[in-house]
Structures are given as C-alpha cells and as structure tokens.
Length: 66
Image (cartoon, rainbow, N blue to C red; front, side):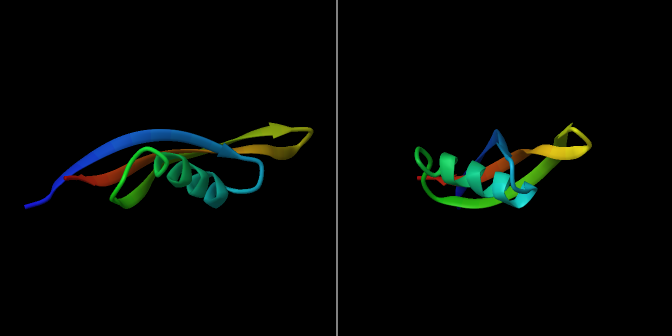
C-alpha cells in the first residue's frame, strides 16, 4: 500500500497557465521526490492595459511518501 501526500502550490507565468503549472511542478521537484500527479485547482490572471499580464495557478501536487 502506498502512502500519498498532497501539497498546494501557487505559481505564476507571463506566458500561459500551462507554463505556470510546469513551473510549479519544477519548483516542487527540487525538494519533493516521487511526484505522481498535479491537479490544477484554480486559474486566474491579472490584466494590464487591456491584455493579460500574468497567468496564475493554484495546483495540488500528489507525491508518494516512502
């Protein structure tokens, strides 16, 4: 039986929500091993001069604890 843990991470990108998600996983993987999945819980963006300025995601990352 595997023991799984979930952490919540906020990340941002000036390119896309996908890039923000990839940054969240990359940052988490620096200190967390055995990442199994990422769930995008929430997406938002800031707007400047009528254009999206910053993409933001709130993700849940699941990893196995050994």
